[in-house]
Image (cartoon, rainbow, N blue to C red):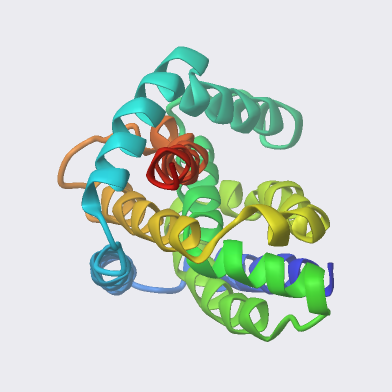
Length: 234
């Protein structure tokens, strides 16, 4: 759990600095930094997708995961959680407020990707949190840029980091016997696609995409790999 706690701490520090000094930054500078972060996220997402061994797994995972996400209303539930936190700590301003947008954007950015999965597993199995330490530095700088633009909601993404990333770490002992290299590769590819969607939707603001409703694809995709491997072994 050391890596997860470190990650949450860097997001908290970076986000706080962004809130304190963000107002002093010119709007042009803040928008440029956010655009740069969006382009970097887009590039990372594309690179991660190229790690796929069979893109059909990613396609199937996204289609089925998207249907499940819409059925379970994942993004609406995340927005509801953000709105609840906003009503408690920042006053009611509606589910479309910058608070909720900051919460959703930061939560997805910090929790979607192979570093979260692989780093959490490595931390849980061996106690080596080096991957999460690298991720923490990146997230700290990202939270500074995001908080200066999107506000207080970015800080509350540490709740999702602690629950999701911490949960992966605690389950890492069993994950070692479940996840194969092929499963991890396809999860990485899907994570890359979700990062591309996040960059297009929330960071670059090109087109609105309900990226949160695609999150179940991270679970569906390795399941598809496992099912195909069962039939392939016969």
